[in-house]
Length: 151
Length: 151
DNA sequence: GATAGGGCTTCCAACGATGGGAAGGTCAAG
DNA sequence: CTTGACCTTCCCATCGTTGGAAGCCCTATC
Image 1 (cartoon, helix red, strand yellow):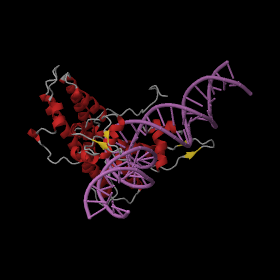
Image 2 (cartoon, rainbow over the protein chains, first blue to last red):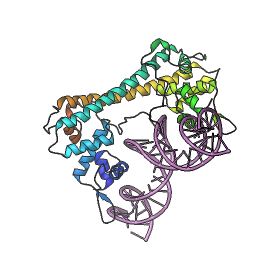
Image 3 (cartoon, chains in turn green, blue, orange, red):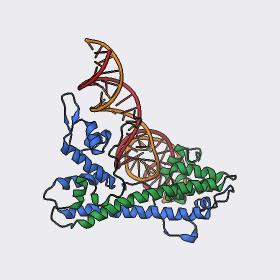
Image 4 (spheres, rainbow over the protein chains, first blue to last red):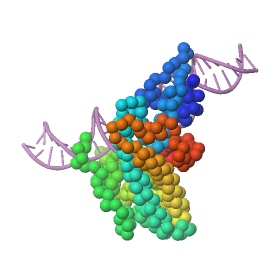
């Protein structure tokens, strides 16, 4: 089948299929005499694997590892589980960070009457730094960079 | 003060300060005779505002709006609150999506014994599509986002 | 005065994953 | 043969941030 059909069957856009091929995530597809890429059902299955893994938030880099394990009949499920749990942990952290942002913002928004007057605790917070009332995380070290082996 | 000192005082890297200037988020800094940028305490305050807003997950585009309101003494706090609540809503959605990924993955990881045998429900799920057992979201729309920045 | 070092300047590239679009070749139906 | 849908490659843009190169400036020390 052509790339468009494979895209429809897998849920991966034709653009991305070409991209995955260019980066080596998937093998180069076969070609017709005129240069069109051709895909088998097995190819579509790989694409669906990728699609599903992307939906679960795995990076393309991790997906490459997962595909390698998927194809390896002598794999150890522990290796797969390690990748999955590491990803879960990454998600957990990012969720926690965003949750913290959200809590802080909700707190500020609740304190803002949101009418036609200019007084606004949200802007006050942004202008003066985190309100001392709720220091959730240790004061961000106001140092971004310096002796950390720069240049 | 020089850009390096302003960076240290604001928590925004010199690189980013130049970038913000180039995109128009902040006004072009003054220059010494030899071309060095110079910053006042007021400039540093703006940079800190930006830093804090970035820490709360606002996009640079939104920050531009917030700074405009910040400077506008005739602003209506409702405008600020609208921006904030819209951002809260965006965070809420992205958190929900990631939470769903995490829940699914945790479910799969729990079912994976993670030993030296090849059998692995995680790979089975990826290879065959979402397990029918827990179809949380039926239609699965077209994109899984894993980073911030809905563009 | 010469030199070393650090800070500053600009410009260019890369990251990750995806979409948009141009310029042109191919295929199938009418 | 024409039309339109499809395919090809190539480049650009996103978004925020970092890295690096080449070169100028400032200060301190010899």
